[in-house]
Image 1 (tube, rainbow, N blue to C red):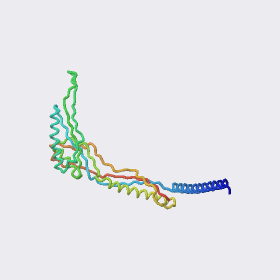
Image 2 (tube, rainbow, N blue to C red):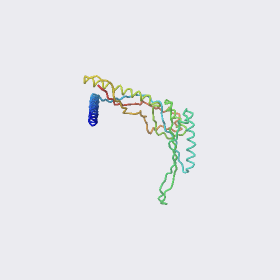
Image 3 (cartoon, rainbow, N blue to C red):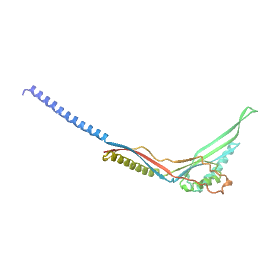
Amino acid sequence: MTGKGSKVASYLLVVTVLAFALYIAGDVFSQNAAAAQDTKENTISVNGKGIIKVKPDIAYIRVGVETRGTDAKKAQQENARIMDGVTAKLKSLGIGDDDIKTVTYRLYPLERYDEKTKKSYVYEYRVNNMVEVVVRDIDSTGAVIDGVSAVGSNKISSIRFGIEDTDKYYNQALNAAVVTASGKAEAIAKGLGVTLKGAVNVHEVSSGGPLVVRDTVGLAKTMESADMAATPISTGELEISAMVSVEYNY
């Protein structure tokens, strides 16, 4: 074979090998695509929800003092004096320093318009000082409210109940959600006359559990009513829910 003929033969051999390789690759791709299509078609998609009911074990209370006066400095001093007593009372009830946090401090004037002088003037100053208190012994929530009221707190704006270890119960709710989803998928598969092979996709739809808020709790009492029965606090139960979306093969 001449040199020219040898080159032509080598070229034809390379072309043949490449063509065969492309044929094999195309066949494998087609098989994989078909398998993927079968997998996608042979799926059951369901949602599952789990709910765990838990008694709250922690409370957050906002308590404070409002003072009024024609002199701003005196109103501030009076507020500070009463608030010191409130703080001391909280500590005597077992509330730690880290569980008492100032959330509002406000000094503002109130004005009136004088028809005679045609001018506005300040007739009173008000001072509001609010702290958020974390009550870790939830059974003492009523006693805390009564205690601060007895020493001069005249502002109680809200109570929030919660769970200190939310993740623990949320994970339980997630587990319940997956069990619910599995039950739905089994029921659908039974109706279709097929057998589930297993889960192929799982998505967490929800996240975490809520706090229950009781707003504007008008429970503050005066010094004269300190001998009254303890303020009753009903915590109820919290619902911690989770939701998942699951795809099963059959």
